[in-house]
Length: 456
Image (tube, rainbow, N blue to C red):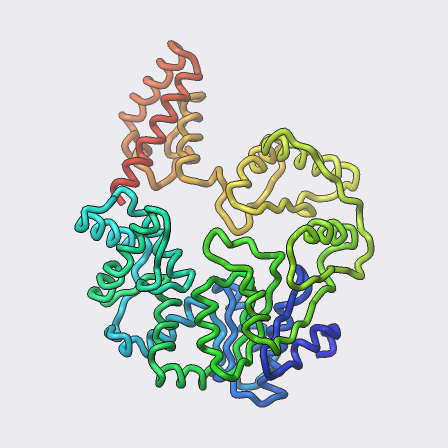
C-alpha cells in the first residue's frame, strides 16, 4: 500500500459504511479498487465470497480480477466476484429465477429476437408495427430506468404505445421461458425486492460491494445496488460526474448525487492527482470542467511539469483535420529523425478513423488500427478496389486480386465470366469514360452486399 498516495490510502482503508471515491481522469482509481479488495481479504480477513466488484465491461472485469490475483500472491481468492452488472444479474437469476415462476433452463434472447417479438405483438394488437424498433428501444429505456410494466408511463404517443405493449411483451418472454438483456438487471431487482429469502441470501453473500464507473450506472442498476446493500451499506462507489458520457443509453450521472441523499453518512474521498497528463493539459481541462454544474468540486493537478503548450488547429472539415495531423507527423518526424511507431492518433469513435486512414495512405505512412477493423479491410471495400484494379488493368488476374471471400461476384466471375466482365468494363470505360465505369463498379459492389444481407 506504500505506493498509494494519501487519498488513495484513505479510500482503501475505509471499510464500513458508504464511500464515494470521486476519481478524476488518470487518478489511479482502478488501483484503488484492486488494492481495496486485497486489503479486505489479506488485512481484514474478509472471506472472498463476501466481496463483489462490479465494472462495465468484461475486459475491465478480467483485468481487475487478474490484478487482484497477482497482488494477493497466493492468498485464496475463491468465491470473489468481479463481473459486469449484467453478469452479476445473470448469476442471481441462475440461482433463483425459479422463485419468479421461470424454469431453471431459461434462455437470454438477443435484440433481434426481441424486436421480432415486439413486432408480432404490435401486429396482433393492430398497433404501429412499422415503429417496432422505436417501441422496442422505449421498452428498453423503461427497463434501464428501473421501471416495471406497471410503473411505465409516458406523455408522448410513442411512449404510450411502448407502455401498452410492455406488459404483453414480458408475458410473451415468460411464456417462452426467456429474458432479454435488460431483464438481467431488472428481474434480479424484482426478485430481491419481492422475495425475502432470496434477498436475505444475497445480502448475506455480498457484504462488501465495490462499483466502478458509477457515473455510468442507470436507474435499474442503482435500484439493484440499493437492494443488495441492505442495512450494511458497505458500498464503495468510484466515479466522476465529469466523465459521464452515456446518458443517451440510460446512464444517470445524478446517481452520484443521489448517494449523498440516500446515505447522509456518505464519506467522500477525492482523487485529484493525475498521473497521465502534464500541467497545461490539466489546466485546460479544469477550465472546461469548471463550466459544469457540480455537487462535488475537484481540481486535477500533476507533478509531471507544465509540458508543451497546447496548440489549437482550426480545420475546415474532417478531411482537412486528418491532412493537418498527417502533415504535422511528417514535419515532426523529419525534424526529430524519428520512427513512425513513435506516433499515435486517438479518436473517439471508430467511424472517425476513415479520413485519417485515407490521409495516411496518401502520404504513404504505414499504420495499424488498434481495437477495430480498418476501413480498407472491409469486404465491400476490398471488392470495390478489386473492381477498380480490373477497370484500370483488364489483364488483372482475379486469383491474385484482393477479392474478399464473403461476396458473390469473385466466385461468379471466375474464368470465362471474368473475361466478359473485363470486356464490359473496358467497353464502358472507352465509351463513357472512367467516371461512369466507376458508377458501374459501385453498383456491382452494392448488389452482393444486398444479397448477403437478405440471405442472412
